[in-house]
Length: 215
Image 1 (spheres, rainbow, N blue to C red):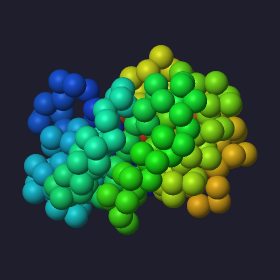
Image 2: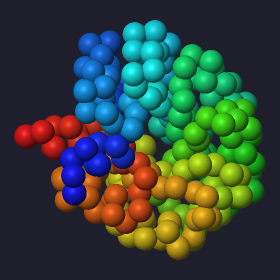
Image 3: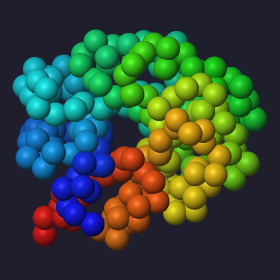
């Protein structure tokens, strides 16, 4: 697969709690050079990146991250502020406790509220597959679809596991036709990148794609 095609699917990511401006700037410089789909950065850096780079790169951020148990109102406020600061994509974490408690409608309602808050901005919903049963994953496919989010995303990269081929296969069987897929966490080889893209993942979240593809 052509390297430029792979780059066009990459959300080039730096979400460590101790990420410095130098690390974020390096990420953004690489994204601009290799034309990645976006940079995925902590919310506190959105405005600074927007001021420094303008429209040269696409800014993605995270809310309710990485544990997902913020109250809905906090996620809505986070999302609205991210858009005001210049984000054009938002990746939210579902309330995993609610999923485990079988409160699927509550999770769907929260996703819907965040989507309404961001409007035309792309919303990706992280369900953190490593903690879920297949039944719960299928329920989240339905919730994401019904709430009219743009993407379902496997993982934060901070859980006990990341994207798996089995989960992407499961997603494909149960998401609606307007929902896209993002694989994240544990995508460590060029073979992984190619497999997930060929399997239908519109996006891959990783911090290492450029290093992998420019060796």
